Image 1 (cartoon, rainbow, N blue to C red):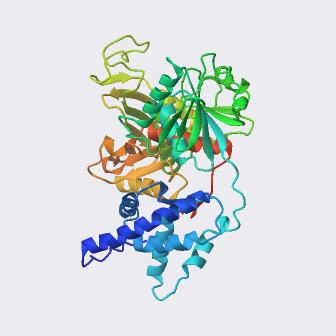
Image 2: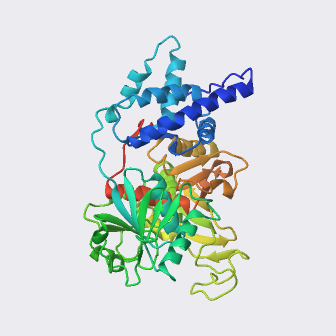
Length: 491
């Protein structure tokens, strides 16, 4: 689509007011569609539970993606037409639909386009009587640390009619009522990601937190992972998300499967032995129906593997070294103290710490074609969240910066990787800009270096929340509740 700059409004404030009113009108329509099982997005950013200002910012964001303005005037009329269609549960990208509709109107200015008919043509695969929406699948979280709490937030906020958080397994400390109060406080407040978007009520009788109206049982598992009868609590065929990292092999994790009510197990850390290490969007489709226990690999593996896959498919990666500049984590110390790994015992907020990473070796599990070609190391730095991966690659043919960036931009916008790969062209981007990102990784195109067959890529990733989004997508895939996304990708 060629660039079509918008005319300067005669009155900026009046124009803002009109567009704000349209965004306000979008909120209840988006909510009504969501209750029908239809999630509305603008370029992979969900409009569900967003404010009118959030929606306006999403429209503005499209300018740096498509290099064209996207106005609420165009998108609102399409949303109205969308509301009246008989849609089955799905994910609809209003932003992409609007851009395509604008392009058609620009190419044929004399053509009168029936928006309803055009939308039916674009969304044929999900047009029809919706029928009864199947009940959500049960999910249980084992562990309530950084990843466990963020997954709880995500499942409640985004699970909708697909995933339902039913229980959290913890080791209770102190009196039950005091423990619940502490757990509620930890879920409600987060120094990195801010306050929880919703309400939390304590139900002491049921030993539960009622989170946005969703009762979540907090279970003491002092007896171990195979000691709970979940079916007796009304939980069935559930996915267990083990966020403790205590058990990383098949034998340890299969203990969860001995519990009535648990059907599958997802590990939130790199798996050991013959455990499948899956990266959503890259090799998760290799998961067999009979595989009950899988690993979602690490946050760093989820960040670097998509980039390596995309670059290798187009330019061929001959050799490479990955350096991760990683935020410190819970296993490090505030002040110097004992740690079983070299250097990790040194004070996290006072030092940059060189350490090892298993991400490079994990690449071979997700991308066997790169086995033996990638090395890696890590530097832990004094920042609590968001990490940076630096990929120094030797390619199979000469490239230039523009070619590499444009290929990655197209893949980020219009390919099957668009939900996991972000792209930024901002010359002022810094780590805190990516706190709360729901992508696995974001390419910093301004930092790309390419000369001859050598290419260096810089990529940001929220090693907490971005990783949790990968876990969320993996949970949807494992339980078979992924929804068709339209319009279809163009790359």
